[in-house]
Image (cartoon, rainbow, N blue to C red; front, side, top):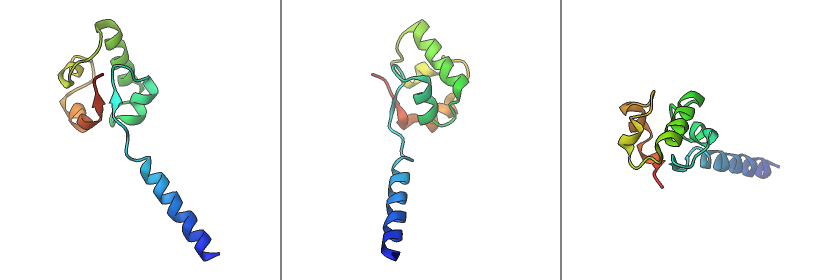
Length: 87
């Protein structure tokens, strides 16, 4: 019984920690939910601003393009630098 409980806890820890590592987000295709769930400091309002900007101006090509979105600044980009994809 102790072994079963120990294995159950081990599996829980392994699977929960695997979800802590977010996959990179393609900001040119991501939904509002994907932006909110995978990027630090991005709530629904900023995610919608990203989507609105890309719909009006086309795809983002580089990190600096995101600075053109209202509410997105250098510190937010720095926090998520490794999590942005441009495809």
